[in-house]
Length: 466
Image (cartoon, rainbow, N blue to C red):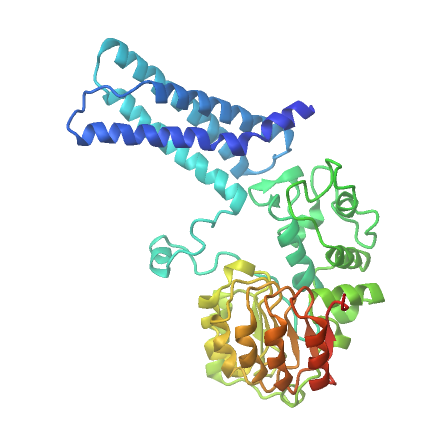
């Protein structure tokens, strides 16, 4: 498509709010007349004319956006497109009938009936547009449990990938899928598959899009997805597109490494070759490398079989959080939980549901979730917890004293959290700690040096002092 089509189409997100606001005002003015008992009193025609004109302009811009941005291949996109056109037609019809009634001095029943139809079409089209941008569960994601039950919604609408064990994670589920979730899925998902490419599922990612395969297993340099990421930022083919957060350097290293290693869905970290560059990238991501993983505790060396009550608890949580919870190994009562792929959908209320697991939890991944310092108070009973990942959460110094009291904690990831030098001293009492990740935090060099003196056997990963 010509650049002019793309240029005009990108005004759609700005223009679409205009007819919505105007028609909302029209409804208000009609309701005011009705409630005042003046049903036959004519309301101004001007807002109808302006609303219809703005609806046509917004629908036209949306059609140009559809053509220029290659938004094909999705039923939701198609429905939104035709919904916008239908709303513009309904707006025109409502305005024409309104003008006819005003000219002839007739009642307003017909134009008000058409107004109801137009508002209904507008509501559906608007909801579809919001679903394209924010996901189909945007409105219902945080709805109260009674309301969700009334609407027939499940507690959790999306599942997470199998993340493997605490000491040998599956690389795709633990690293690659979260990278795609953060950088690509917004434009390449169900209902919004630009270029017919989906990155929200492994099989669809490997299937590619209308331009062919997105990646070539074993050849990152020859993979189209890597080529697009590495284009200059001012190139219109660069991905993610302008205005979207770019992929970080360590994320790109890990993505290329995974592709070069065969781009397999179930390959674990121990089955892959690690270079120094990859190890450094993994250090920024979190404690995934086998050489940087906690040493197994005596409970994992001599596993205790789970009792029937624990098996039942795990089964119930697996139904609520599919594939996020599992036993560390066959015949062991140690439990592993990963909420990394749930991300912001996993909050304090979700963490509260894990209370029955706390005495058995050995690994907990809460990366990029919505948990807070207050919600983490439930970890006080996790006496066997060895590995905890809190990277990219909003937690701060308040929770650190409680974490330092966990007797088995060996690996702690606080990457890009709000912990500071004032609070980090609390960890000096964490005697078992042997791996600590503090990238992108407000902990200064002096605090790091103090901590290293108290924990001489702990490997602390943090930026070099300025």
